[in-house]
Structure formats: structure tokens, C-alpha cells
Amino acid sequence: MSVYILIQVQRHTEVRNFKLEQEQEKNKILSEALETLATEHHELEQSLVEGSPPLSILSEDEFYDALSDSESNQSLSRLEAVTARSFEEEEGHLSSRKHRMSEGKDCGGGDALSNGIKKHRTSLPSPMFSRNDFSIWSILRKCIGMELSKITMPVIFNEPLSFLQRLTEYMEHTYLIHKASSFSDPVERMQCVAAFAVSAVASQWERTGKPFNPLLGETYELVRDDLGFRLISEQVSHHPPISAFHAEGLNNDFIFHGSIYPKLKFWGKSVEAEPKGTITLELLEHNEAYTWTNPTCCVHNIIVGKLWIEQYGNVEITNHKTGDKCVLNFKPCGLFGKELHKVEGYIQDKSKKKLCALYGKWTECLYSVDPATFDAYKKNDKKNTEEKKNSKQMSTSEESDEMPMPDSESVFVIPGSVLLWRIAPRPPNSAQMYNFTSFAMVLNEVDKEMESVIPKTDCRLRPDIRAMENGEIDQASEEKKRLEEKQRAARKNRSKSEEDWKTRWFHQGPNPYNGAQDWIYSGSYWDRNYFNLPDIY
Image (cartoon, rainbow, N blue to C red):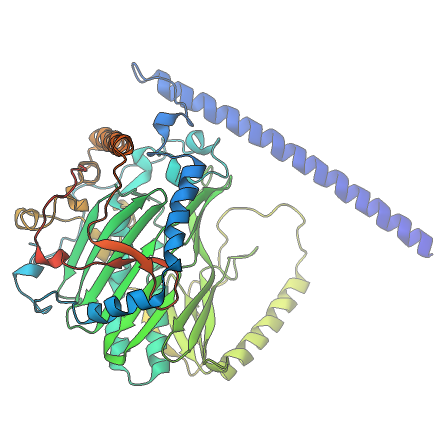
């Protein structure tokens, strides 16, 4: 009897292996067919453009000021070497920085803060272009495993914002920082900080357009009296691409800063952005500092199908004064989409005792609840999930990359929970405006009064972004190419003269709280004394 069972198992295994080989062969044939079709489609597009040469995807001209891998590694090595400096060198600078926020001026107002905009716009000058007639596959098909920062993408796949402006969207829910400062209980403060960290990635939902790569030396400032903060950012390195930012409360209640250099890679069906760099929030009234890094962001269906975004990975927020930590798990969507957009985790003290549980969706809301109540709910939910799985016949076919539909569009609220944050609704015209939030809609607005105040390196003055925002796609493409060529020429000239690039508003140094490589604000930007700025546009 046992021999008969073994024979049956062996036959079943052989059948499964045979079917698997057939599926692999079908996928291989389909992939080759897709590549052939994409190539022919692109060559046909090129032939319709008079005088347009065939696209050489990996030619030197197509790289965004690309360097060799060894040069990039050397740049990283120089940056990482900064962390070897002792913390003592930074402590004096740190303490003086907290008292120097206003840079000799009252943060509550004055001409130094004026940048022209009193009433913010609710729409862009022109709606977005359709991307349906453009094949991103023809650009990416030979770039699997490469860093996308080294590949020039057609402007049609961009959104009319620089990455520096995209970073500024961290500040959309600044009220959570002010709320954290108002609490005397450190656990309540951590809850608000955790909600702020989750809200910082909420604007990425359905934002499938790529922000423009900042030029070396590019800057961006934003002053929002209504939200109680001002921010300055600068592109401090091009390879690796590093964006540094520094925001401060107008009432001297907080400092929020960081340096971000995402690692972007194309993996066939998806593009993954692995976060690099430390984010720091200082609550000055409580003499507290929190640090964390963002979750990994992945854009699916790059070749065929509807683009969709998920965030996944652990985010660990540390209170460096109390030792408390909040560990949040951004769940990958899973095979059936049950975990799509979900975030959950715990606040724990330095002895790892659970003080509070957090749960919700990064696209929607975040709640807090007693950890025992949350654990009981999770245990019951796991039991119900296993029963559902046992009642279904599991498929052995390859997992689809299509966006799974979650069991419910809203979060089930556990009795006794407290709402920490809920996302604001997007404007009615968002779908025609690159899926921008109301906050993102105003980031590139400018008027004559503002132009007379901001430095000439500000993102708002970039001609390619401005042209795209105005619906002039051909001019945007020409300007983007011109700026990239100008940047390459400037880099070559510096290499010939052995001249090093000098940042203006930030300097390298270890993060004062966790020792990680970082860029620290040097001060003096808000003095409005702009001289010897680079000509990058």
C-alpha cells in the first residue's frame, strides 16, 4: 500500500514539474514577444519623427550625468568616512543650532519670511498629459538591475515637481508635530510622532509620476505661516544623489531635518525605491529627538497594466531621550491583498515592554489602542484567516503582479481605539493634476514678489519644470536635455581644474543622535543674502 502511495506521489510530482516547465516556457516566449513588440513599436515611433536617430538606451548621452560604479562607490566612501568624526565635534554646533533657529530674527514674521504668496492656488495651469501613447518598456527593458538615477527618462513620465519639492510633502501634516509638543506624556508624544512618520508617505498613494532629478546646487524653500513652519532644502550631491532639508517651527517649537538618497532599481515588472538616509525630529520644548528611516516604496506594473504603489518594511522610531521605540511594520500586500496598505506596530519602553499598539493604513488613517486588546484582536483575526484559507483551493500558478483588492476599503476600528491621524481628501481635480494633494498643488507656485526674494537656484525657477506645469511638453523636454548637458559640462570643467563642489547651506557630519552619515544645516539662508550662487539653469 505504501509503495502504491509513493508511486502516486512521484507521478503527481512529475506532472507538477512538467506543468511548471510548460509555464516557464510560455513565460519565456511571452517575454521575448513583448520585447520584440516593444522594440518594433519604439522604432516605428522614431521613424515618424523627422531626423530623429534611433534610441540607444544605454548610450552615454542617455545617462543623467552618469559616473562609473567605482566613482559612485568612491563618493559613498567619502560620505561614509564622515561618521568617523567624534560626536564631541558636533555637540557644540548642535547646542548653538537650537538657539540659532531664527538666525537673529523673530521666526514669527518679518520681511525675511515674505515670499510673495498670500492666497494659494487650487489647480495647476494645465492638466497632465496622457501617458498611454508612450512605452516605458522600450526605455527600461535593458536596464534590469541598474540604478534608475543613472538613466534619463522621457519627460512624459515626470510630474512637474523636483524631488526637493516632493520631499517637502513630509510637512503636509505639520499639525501632528505641534500636537506632539503639546503633550506632557512621552507615550502620547511618540504616538503623534509615529502618526507624522506614517502621514509623510501618504501623499505617494497613486503618485506614479517621477519627480525631476534635482540639479547639483538646486534649492527649494517653503514658508507656510498657516501651518507654522519654514523649510530650506539643497541638492548637496549628484552621485550619489543626496537631498538635504531643514525645517523649523515658526514658534521655535521643533526642528525637522534629514538627508535622503533613495536607491532606485528596476526589477522587470516593478521599480523599487529603497530609502537611505536618516530623518530627525527635535521637540525643543521637551529636549527630545526622534530618528527613523522611511519604508521601501515599490511601483508595480511598469510594463503592462495599471500602475500601483505599495510601501513595505519596518520603520523604527527612537526617542533618544527616554529610550522608547515605536516599531511599525508596513505590510506587503500579500497574495490576496488582505494586507494591502496596512501598518501596525507597538510603542515600547527601553526594556521592550509594550506600552501601546498602533494600526491603520498609510493611505488612510492610524489608530492607537491598548496592546492587550490589540493582541487579542490579532489572535482572533488570524484564526478567522486560517479558516478562510482552508476553505479555499490554493492556486499553484505564478503570483500575479496586478493590484490585489483588499478585503475592505476601510480600517476595522477595534473598540477602545483612539484616532491619531486621518488623511485629508484630495481635491476633485486631483486625477487630472498628477494625483496631487492640495498641499502638493501649491509647491511650485510663484509670483513676481517671490521671484525678487528667493535665490536663483530655487526649483520654482527651473524652466523644464515650469514648462511641463504649463502644458508645454516639447519645451519641457528640450529644457530638461539642455540642463542635463549643462550640468555634465560643468562637472567636466571642475574635474579638469580639480575644483571640488562646495555646498552652500549644508555641511557633512554625523547625525548627532545616532551617528549615521548626514548633512547638517549650516545656517544663514534666511538672511536673504545670496551671493556667488552657481548658474545651474
